[in-house]
Length: 125
Image (cartoon, rainbow, N blue to C red; front, side):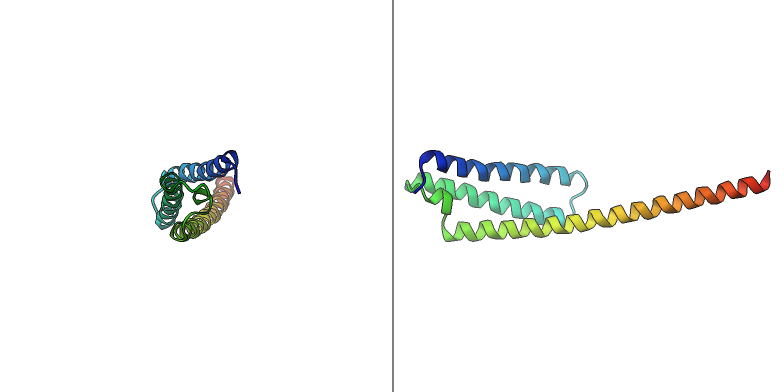
């Protein structure tokens, strides 16, 4: 069904996506290893394991379709990994949005305090 070139392109596409996910995981780890980070890490680890096991099965059993479709267990683990990564990514997004709102509140508070200090400074002179 798939030629060797198409199979290589499909496998490299999966690997490319995994590489970008791992780069993101390392970057997010620098801001702290929170629950969302651990969720994303476990999701990427499961997806990586499923992809690698599918490729290993392809070479071990000699079936070219196994690298694309995989066994039912590999498919389940890959989907579970994607679900965990998506949940962790959503939690991380909520945290970043909450931090941005808090930063905006603090900036407003600082601006208000500076304005009030300016008014008091004008009244003393």
